[in-house]
Image (cartoon, rainbow, N blue to C red; front, side, top):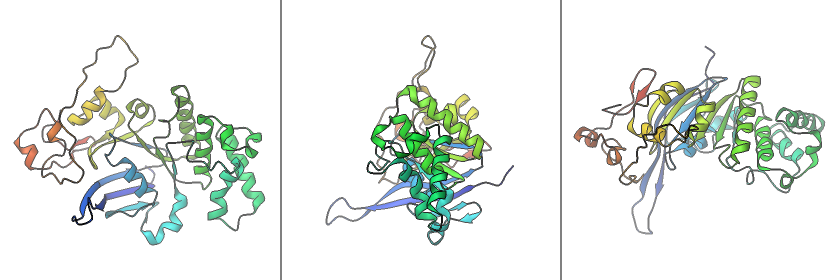
Length: 317
């Protein structure tokens, strides 16, 4: 197997917040003790509901924020803040909203060329233009689009432009933060197929962040299911979809729409309140909403247990 392009060990990000002027600072545990390995040509999907730490993970991997603790390696090199300037070209991100991620005052050619202009100032303008025009063709757009403005494009076309901009620096890792959730269903499959084609051509590694398990089923190789900043189940796509071990993962999968209208569904409806991210619960963070909770769950936090398919649950399915 080829060497990994990204390795995270105990990746953690906490934020200090104050509720009032005279109140003591409290800690939001946005991400805690996350481990993963990302290989070229593979897609690691991170799934979970809002507030589980997916976007925090994206900010750490793209070196927008430093981790509170833990380590991240990119291409075998530690991604410490003093190395960010040299490593940022190896990791690029595609944002969720194709309407807000493009500068409306710039032509498409300028948008595509800007990463090269900033990061490779010695590159000639003609070479930047040639690279931008080549990228337009690679993402399925036409040469005449080079001189147009973002408002002249549909949502799907704008997302193609955003993907092309992310690829201008020849990254090894592409972080895809809900890249199709803002698009019409009819356009989503075209963008997903484009991403798969680009991955095959360029041997890209994807960190795919999503809450839509039907999309994850189409594109992922491996999956991390997160809850309140922690990984509660990890495994291959086949393992997680065929046999979810953690009750939360099972509940998520039960809510996924099915194409067969006559198929039977055993929908699991979670009860109880989502714990506050400010609370450092002593046991399993899912215990207040879990139908299998026992005394041990409320006092002891379960680690990820298993071999290739792991779950942080004392009483897995």
